[in-house]
Length: 380
Length: 111
Image (cartoon, rainbow over all chains, first blue to last red; front, side):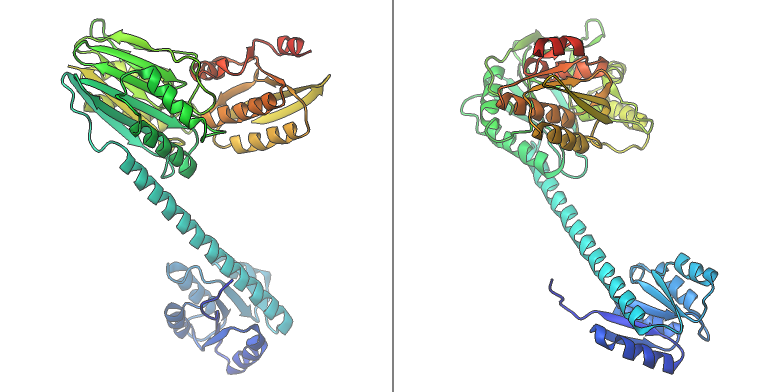
C-alpha cells in the first residue's frame, strides 16, 4: 500500500499537561500531530486539515466535546473522520452519550499509554480501509456508467422510416448496464427487419454479450431477410462465446407491400398482437426453439402472419412482465395483455406511455431487477 | 429458496423450493455446484415446490444439465408447476432438457 501523505491526528484538550502526555504517548505511531486547546479551534483545524482521527476531551470551557462532535458529524466534509472521546467522565451513560452522537470509541482518563496507542492504530486502520472501499465503489460505479453509456450508443440512433408503419421504443436498463438490445435493418422493397434480444444477467457481463450480438448482427453477410437464417447465424457464432450464459431473441421481417410479417423466436417471450378487426389481443406463441448460445440449431421454425391496417404489435423483454411490487407479486403477461388492449386506441407513443405508467403504478416504487424494453408497431 | 438433496441408488435428487430469483440464484448456483462436485451422472430436479425462476435461474439449471451431459449421464426436470412450467416452455428449454410430470416417473426412468 502506498501512502501519498502521512496520516494525521488532531488532539483536543484544554489542559496543556494532558496534551503534552498525549503527544508523548502517540509520538511512536508515526502520524502528524495537530493540536487544539478549545472546541472552536478544533472545528476550524478539522475543516482545514481533515485529520484521519480526532482525540477529543469532553469537559472544556466554552464549547464542550459533545458539541464539537455533533458539529463534526453534521458537516459532510468532516462527518467521516473518526472521533475518540478521551475523558475523566467514567459513567456508562457518559460513554453511551458519546457513542450515540457518533464517536467510534471512548477512553477514560487516566489512561494506559499502550491502550491509547492500540485503539488509535485500530481506528486509523478501519478509517483507511473504509476510504479504500469507498474509492473502489466509486470507481466501479463510474465504470458501469461508462459501460451503460457505450451500450446506449450501440442502440439505433433513430427509428426506421418505413411506409405504412409507425414505431416507438422504450428502453431502460437496471443497475446501469444491461443485456437488452434491439435493432432494425431497413431492406430494399420496403422491408424491415426487427431484432429484439435479451442477454441473460445484468451489469457488465450482460452488456458485453449484448455488444457481441450487436456486432454479429451488423456483420451479417447478406440482406437479413430470412428470420431462420439470421438466428441460425447469430446462434452459431454466439455458441462459441457466451457459454454458460444465453441470449433470447426474436427476429421479425415485415414486408410492407404485402403486409406480411415473418418471425423466428429463440426462447423469447412471444409478442402480443392486437387485431383491428375484432379488437382482441392475443399472444403469438412459437415454442420449441431454445435461446442462442447454448447449442447449434438443427432447424429454426418461422411463423408468418398477414397484418391489416390498424393491427398492432407489442414486443417486450421479460424485465417488463417480471417487474415485482413490494408484495413480491409479478406484473405478468396477463396485465400486459390487458393494458395493451385498453390503450390500443392511441398512437404508438400513447400506447407505450400507458403501459409504462401501468407497470410503474403496479411496481409501487419497487425498483426494476432487470432491463426493460417495449417496442410497439402499428400498421397504418 | 431452499435446496435439499439426497442420493437414492446412485440417483442425485435435488429439490428446489420457493423462488429462484436475482437474490437466490448465486446461493443456488453454489449449492448445486457443490452437489455435482461430489460426482454422479444421474440427476433429477424436483420442482414440485418451485414457485418462480428468473432467467438467471434457467442458467443455473442449464449449467447443471450441461455438466451431467459432459459426464455422459442423464438429467430430468420433474413435477414443474404453473408459472415455472410456462417459463420452461416459452424459453424452449424443454427441448434441450427432458421433463417428467412426476418425480416417481423420473426415478423409474433413471433406474
